[in-house]
Each structure stands twice: as C-alpha cells, then as structure tokens.
Image 1 (spheres, rainbow, N blue to C red):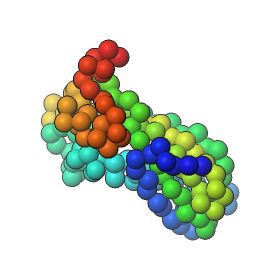
Image 2 (cartoon, rainbow, N blue to C red):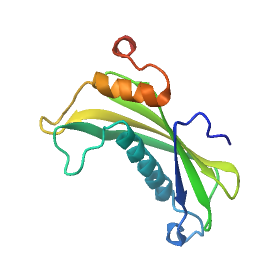
Image 3 (cartoon, one colour):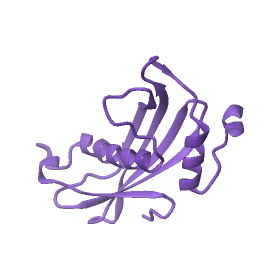
Length: 150
C-alpha cells in the first residue's frame, strides 16, 4: 500500500501490551495510533492547544474505523493522515494504518473534527488561517467559498 497521497505519515511500533486476550492488537490501539497522527497533523498546522482547552480549538465529533486485518506483536505500523474536506465548522480527516510486517492495510479510519469555542461551549467557523495552513500542507485549496457551497 502506497502512502504517497498522505502528507503526514506517523510511524508507531506495536507494543506487546497492545495485544489483548485474543492474541491480536486490541481495536482501541488503532484509534490511539490515529489520534497520535491526528495530533501531529494539528501541530503542523498550528491548531493544537495545550490542555486544558480554552479559547478556540478542535474537538473530535466522530470517528469510524474499518478493520481490515488483525495485527500482532512485533510489528510496526505507518499511519497516513490527510484532510479530505473542510466545511463551515468541520474538518474531515482520513487515516490509513499500514502494517510493515504484512505489507498491507490493517485499517481505514475517518474522523471529523469541529472547530469549537471552549469558553462559549459552541462550534465556530474554521478560520481562514487554518484553511490556508491545511491547503499549504495538502497542496490544494480549502477556501471559504467552497465551504460555503457545501
């Protein structure tokens, strides 16, 4: 599986403790790996707030994982992360988890972040500066006009 279309790839070593009683990596580990990659992406576009959250920042609104193959220790996975769409207040991301040992996709994950004003406790519009930073990283435009048409 090629990760060439992903602007950020995070490498994670599978730990022995990631396995569960069924002798394969527990499903929650896949989501943690994607979380790690998502945070790295947010740091690159200057959208990561140091906890506790205050002011404006992202909040995870939804996540879906399609498991393709079970993984076991020892192995290393590469997690590709990219933004696929930006709405008025949302940012959609796609992740792919690739096993180095098996040379195969282990899972595909879709997540949606919402820009959130933690002080006012409500969603807010994705700022133009963030759209531009994502566009620069992804190599394509995520302008306000295209979001308004969605």
